Image (cartoon, rainbow, N blue to C red; front, side, top):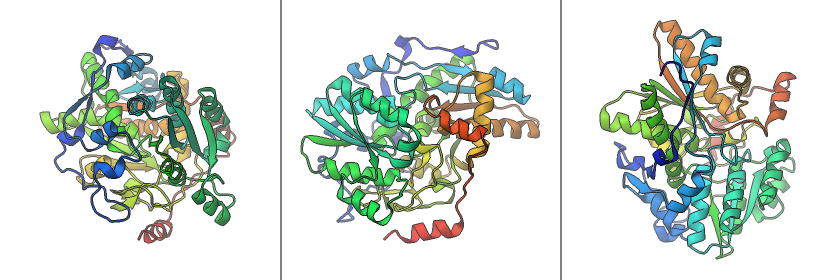
Length: 450
């Protein structure tokens, strides 16, 4: 397999079940709490927001959950996705290590987000839902859900974080083309949005604010449900098709990764590539390392606090046990919009708390430098979010060389950067700024959590 660059699976080899890491975790997460009573929530508390099948998946402990045939059929328009050996990148680095990447940029949305958008729209359709409200950071999730809703005959409205709405007009147009209504957040369409704009007319917005706006509208209409593109257990579950395919592909290559890397916003991309390999650690005694990479400007894993906090800014969501910077936190306007979220998913938070995974933060200039090198060697322009994983994979290869060892490194290329070329223009023009939070800023944000 030494000369093989691309490792493909056939449609018949595509996994037909999602892997649920809850079955194998040594310590199960603490339960979400009701925002008003502070008591553990039950299915009836989530029923006004999500369809029941997704609620069941949220709390499931079965190791595998069947992927519906209709979801599989739509997956097959872009899955199984290829695994590549990055020979040219390795050569440019002069490294002895092997670098592999799973390419999730070939879906209709250009990212991994389609893996959960399709089943979420499907389960809403089964329950007779006519309309879905959601939010999107950089636009990948909104793009993915827009087509999925159009396919299953559901209306969609998307609250897009203002800074990304301004930076990435093509993403908005893509969502419009698929039939979705897109509103910049914060907006004057909701009570909470108007409150934010009154205090901060030039607010760049945040995922927390956009979630609050989406949920405010969703709970007012019984025919409307809410959908989330990351963080929650059922979302991470759907993404495990990535890692399950990668396990099979690495077996074909005759390799087992020493290190697996994923960029980190709320957890879906990182979980997708990592969880099926973590299973090997849990059940087969393997010793694979896992690194979640986040922006230095939004470092909840590396500098946040593990505690109960809201998933949104206004406090409408359940309280989740997670690493957080505080639900009022507004991240700097970096171009990796999908990583600008104040909290981490419950499952990933528990794994980090138990020292079963690692976390690392990076500044955006270093990551764009790595992304440009990747583009010039591997011919794929990465999404700004993916650049964080690339930079860390390169760092791991260099560290291995310094130690005089060879490692097998796998990272998830979460999406392409075709809609993000203005950010590359800023990089080439020297107009990207690095931002790192001070301890005082973090302490102030955390102190506001009641």
